[in-house]
Amino acid sequence: MDIKGQTVIITGGGSGMGAETARSFAKAGAKVLLWDMNIGSAEAIALETGGTAIQCDVTSEASVKEALSKSGQPRILINCAGILLGKRIVGKDGPADLEHFMKVINVNLTGTYNTMRLVAGEMSKLDPIGNDNERGVIINTASIAAFEGQIGQVAYSASKGGIVAMTLPAARDLGKQGIRVMAIAPGAVETPMIGTISQELQDSISANIPFPSRMAKPDEFARLALHIIENTYLNGTVIRLDGASRLAAK
Image 1: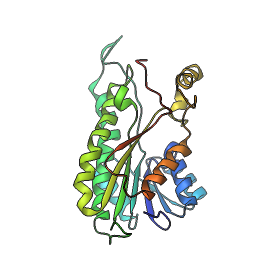
Image 2: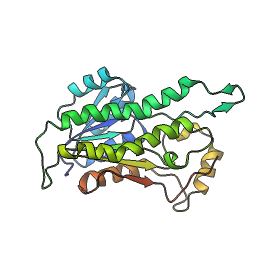
Image 3: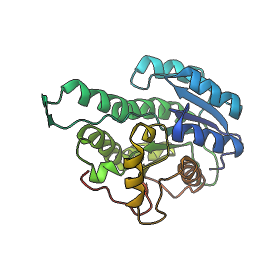
Image 4: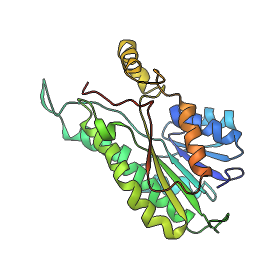
């Protein structure tokens, strides 16, 4: 699909990979819609990119429907909204609280499914375009933690593993509607989320990445997403973006 002139929804568009994707897609000629809980951050990126900021809680059906009612006719959905909260199953204070696990699953996995199902419903009503009669593209954000989660990442790994697992069946479900579904599984990326850990740990992570020995830059995620949209034969799979790194236990 040629992205020029297309309406793109980016969840979590107010920061990190979502914000950089908005910048890249706007430069490529797309109409960018930034869905984010933090409307102030989304508005700042919208002002920069000429896009539109819409406050949205991806875990709420009503909130997503309300955001969709303001979003025109989206052909592309990039799900970047997510949280990273670490906790061991059993720590110094005993078993982890169930609310921690449920919150991570609800935002990262249920939120992704919620937006995917509702936006895909709107995409399915659009006229097909291009030689392959395509109606839309959905790109979800997984993580390499889905494959080799670290100590304390049970909830996060489960949420991202769910995104990986639903990629192929989602593509099969939506194939008849002409909608492709892909996922990107980044390793460590230079985002505000990474900034919450110590510089010593950040340096350690970078040193263990074979090549290039650094964290990924948000624009590398954005460029991969753009290629997925433009390459119609990419469908139903997960692409790792990790510099050949594999996470150690801790």
